[in-house]
Length: 324
Image (tube, rainbow, N blue to C red; front, top):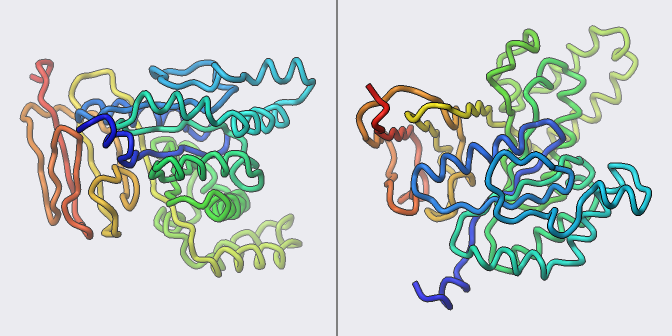
């Protein structure tokens, strides 16, 4: 491909958003590792000016432009106001971002975003950055991570539903909501309902009834009913459970379940996909691609989907010398 055609070709990637501590950086680390193992070129872009301990090789880092500690010290702002200022500063210096990204055209992009909820639900700076990326022919999907422990508290889960819905409407990108840290959910306590109830966001009246059993929340039943009514009227929010385990060994397996939604075969791995157990260490000694009820190929650019609507399971395992 010539340099000119590569410059004009669309670029694909994910913007990883969510509240602090939800696992955004861990997700980017694991996704980068996964794509590298299937031969995909990946560029990770850190847009969090407060992230000082980055576990992955960071190709583009906003710290070269602005850092949160400097803003807080020089402008006497708190952490929340400082993050908003940093995002506004990034929006005002988009030429810096364009120059940095242009050097990696043709790669798959992972944008590791800050952990301040207001940036995705109310403030326009990051939304405008994403809109400008779209004008530069970036095809992006928003990956919104939420800690799965919120499922154990009905009040917090309703808040998460409202936040997720607000982010979906505000960011205006193809959107996937993910319940992260599923391997730890049993440590948080017993769920009031089956996991499917939370991932599919089923009849929320049961959740309101469950909340009403608490004397404190009983006084706010009308408010909870109205919040649930808004969520159900939009009928947009659902979640994908995700358990990401970073392995120390050399053997790996990836399991993906296709939702059967329409998407381009070159969009990537996220849009329209339900990722379950993204990286699970297992000992496989045969290099193989197992396919069932789908049309997927493993090429030099990674997994490619050859049909518009695909259902089934795909498992990809890679043989290494460490297998016994």
